[in-house]
Image (cartoon, rainbow over all chains, first blue to last red; front, side, top):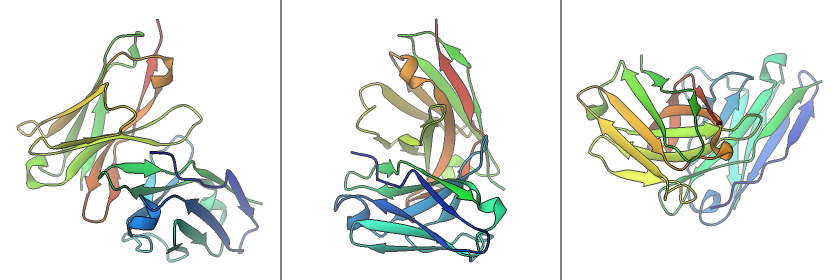
Length: 110
Length: 119
């Protein structure tokens, strides 16, 4: 199984919206509505931000939203804040009941 | 509140076996859920290693399957990772997680432990 493809970096100014893409195949992203997104600050464990493509766990800001079209899932952060600067990873289940992670995206707040 | 804590040697010699244990508190492993391991080499991305159900049913990353074994001890609320024949490429921060296979996500993570493979 190959890693899902994410852009290496995305940047935006405070208050703006940014979108991170996550491209897979019919065997993972495109085949199931089980895409999750994780935020990771330096030296910290990842934090679940989105599950099942577009659902937010309790306590996660509604500035974070997810969607999917075909083999590509997306995470949108609206009203960008300094604290959103972090690495973001997508993951999906696969036809083999395993997981595959995305390559990761570094978000920079200008 | 569910908490996970990794423990084990921070240094392993090449060709030897890496062994880590995750202790779960605030939840009984035998109550359900899968429990898994994820790693992150320094400066690189996340890689799912594998997961185990409290009954012992396992799923492994195909790229690591020949070297990985995950086991569970429900009496201690612990699960363990063994990775054999390690090389420098296995140097990473290793996280234990709760793997929720209804929504297919990892809601709870340990703090992570760095394991370095070096002679």
